[in-house]
Length: 203
Image (cartoon, rainbow, N blue to C red; front, side):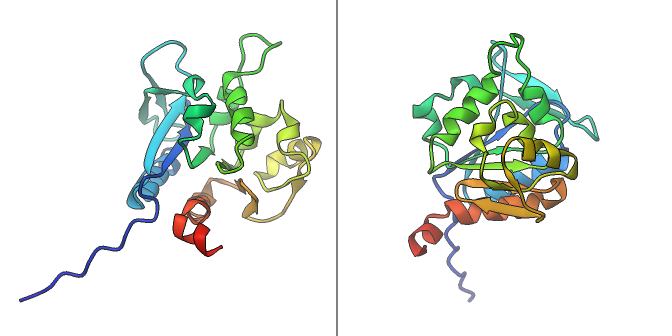
């Protein structure tokens, strides 16, 4: 007769993680986040600007794989955003596409979302590779903070007043940045550690 060992509790049960999406996302990165956070019990929500539609389907950068998103980032007011433990801006051209505004005198809705997010210190904000593009029009969000990014963005983040750090992953309080998409596993691990309630209690 064999006895089964009790299952270890998942570290992120009851937590919700938002991932911004648009076309030219990196397929393997998004798949990894969805799988890894899901393994720890988190609800993973894909978010984008839906332009009044109930859903939109985007295409990946490498395999042109489809990705359907039905949650609109414009609906994330403070009350709804408070229900998230982390917000991730991934690699690829997601940030560049989401910083588009049809009215150049008004910020993109995704940038408005990031402004709300940065006012919530309990919400982890994570940016991979080129993702800091999204906040380039709001340099006050990262000015004076330690970050890393793709080599192509080093001049940009310095112009934004951030302190570039030559590391694969950098944590500055509630802000996590990674150098390239190759570090997506480090981003996921770092986010999990930051929002794990057991780790929080131990700290």
